Image 1 (spheres, rainbow, N blue to C red):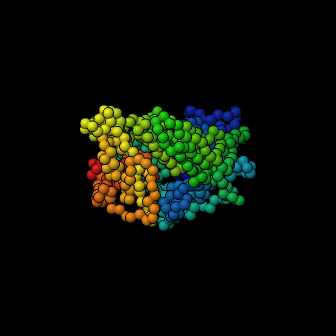
Image 2: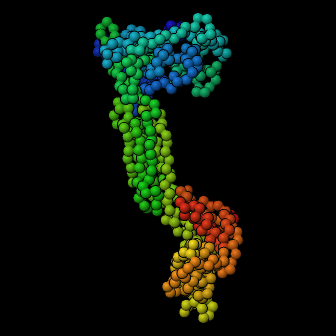
Image 3: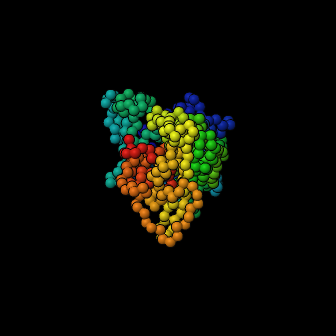
Length: 510
């Protein structure tokens, strides 16, 4: 035991004498209790300052790293903590270590675990006196021997039936200080400047049994922490539960139906397995948390699933972001899943900036082309000289002597103007054949007509195509070769069968 450790132990005994430790019946030693978790241990539901009787542990992540890393070789970590990848470390207090000791008993076997040395390679003085205090002796920093140094001792092999160690460690504002004993008066201050009073913590490290099997997910290991003197003993039972890495999984997050209009009700559904807690949040200020749940029992590592759903009324937002998060009892998060729920922009407002038909709303938004009231010349149109509807039958050739007909209508002042408008918006091989009446099969093979109706010629049309997406319209400049501009727009839209597309304007996108 170093002189520094002796000083810390003496200070702890003095502290217990002055303020008292955990009490017990007259003559019996005070009880030990776990007051905090440290390395590879977790107590997610505990209240700060209260004793823990249940904790969780896992496989130490850095045990999978190269064994030549400093925390394996140099010795500043506890030998028991390094010797077993399932070892865990906690902070204890209560009884008098020197007078009553601390014994760990495995409840399952009834056997007391063997006590191991904290480390076989003891620290050496590596720190000069503080510059601000020339009379302060060395010992402000410690060094552990390197494997290449003479006198280095290999770490001992732990028994597979379990073991434990108890050690006193310097602390600074609750943080363990293994190699540098300085504690600046202010957090982040100069370590060689004014120092805060030294503190210490009793750290208990337990190496669970690894034979005949290593701990499995959900295994509950129980230990009695015993203080013993000539008058008898007191014990505190703790439960350590193993949490396997990677078990907590967010499996799915979806909405049904996918999006809708303002005021529509959708069901947000999710599936989570083997997690300690799960939470579903939205970016809607009115409903920031859609769901939260955690394992109720303090000694349950997880439940098989959190499969659930919640109804949600779509607000006046272009889309709602839904986020699913979950974590296991060690605080390790599962994969975060994000869902974007689209809201029909026209249901937000007929003049919404993302509504495709906004320019057809009344009143028409200022940035839309203002429609002119159509007025027909005298003698044309209806009785009020307004557009009237003309109905036509259009014949379309599909090749090989086959064809089909379809009805078309147009509002115009005259039949001729309406027929021209209908012909202008037809695709290749289609043209008006009559205004009304039945279609007559021409019979035989059809004679190919001109490329475009009305003698028009194909040309390159440039236009701005807008297509719907979950985050709003996506605009892209298109150039298509067609008889008429509507034909070009139809060609571009056909290449996006899963989207709703329309022409935003002729020419390049703004």
